[in-house]
Length: 492
Image 1 (cartoon, rainbow, N blue to C red):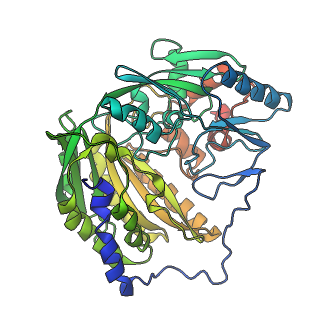
Image 2 (image 1 turned 120 degrees about the horizontal axis):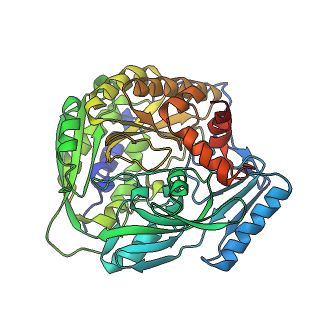
Image 3 (image 1 turned 180 degrees about the vertical axis):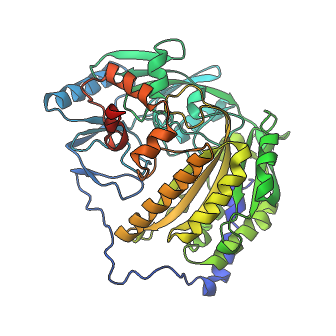
């Protein structure tokens, strides 16, 4: 069986991780005398993937009803109960956001946890809380694959639509571009269908609308034929990456992504472009992470404070890792769980950033990031580069005017007040630099952007607010994103 992309690029690191253990002593700042932010947990709070968003809630219910009248009745009952006591409502699935975007403060938190998938030709109707690995399991025996999904398979389908998430299949925009219609319950209990031709204003607001327009119950989504794909690896100076990446965005390359080196000596100087193209052969059943992929955690997690390890990892990815990679099915490439490289250090947490810039400004972004990130106390573990086509539909689109190169950065952050203050400062500097070159930042992560930065980045947020007030005048559907930025939008 061929190695997955993660196993190929990281798996060889298991051996290096053991052999090089004598050099793994990290140079992170001392935690002596520093208080660690420790979530209290319990039934009266809810947190998310950041572990820094612990929020008091009134109640949390997990809905296991399949699509149908019982599910709608349960949701309507929660809306009525919340209205009676003027409490907010928010719905979610895996809650992998990082700033409370799926958490209603002192409100009713609802989690969907029942898979339901009905395939019809090259489309499928799916219950909102269905996870992507369940979609892959249903589509794979039929020779189909998700047209676009997030890069990890743990997330809920409606959540992907609601946060405007994209993936690394090319040359598509966000996953919402492959959604034909959604069914959702408005705050007053009205059940509506929204698409590009029916209730188009609701569809545009709900796509990337973070659950603030309605409680999505079902989606009709497009699939594509599964393929056997073989990778090629090309290294180059970062200055040459954008041209090479956009040259393959013509529909001939089904999947591709890039990486940059992250050690401080050569920070962002070199790039790697990984392309997957169809090859002949039998397509094996969809699989996920194997032993090597899991074993790679040793070197991946040894990176904070250790520049030697970061350099060795880049050498592995561009060397032996590339040589080990073989053909894999399209679905297997996307069937990766988040937990494969999960952190187990109680003093640190993983924080994502994502920035979108036009291809001709990518070199400017790399230069800005190189000037800002190494001067912080944050430890960059990885940067992945993806192509995202224009999204003219979503009111809160991060690519409204043309295609973008998306830079997904994964940081390891101390769970301390000093680290949070430093992350806030660094984030605002990065956002300001990205806005200055016509780019945008992604909303589902830490809410460190200033209100002014949010407004300048998302120019159609006022249109979003108008739709919100039309369908939810009592502001029943709320979360931390609303509380931080959109509630203040009434003074635009």
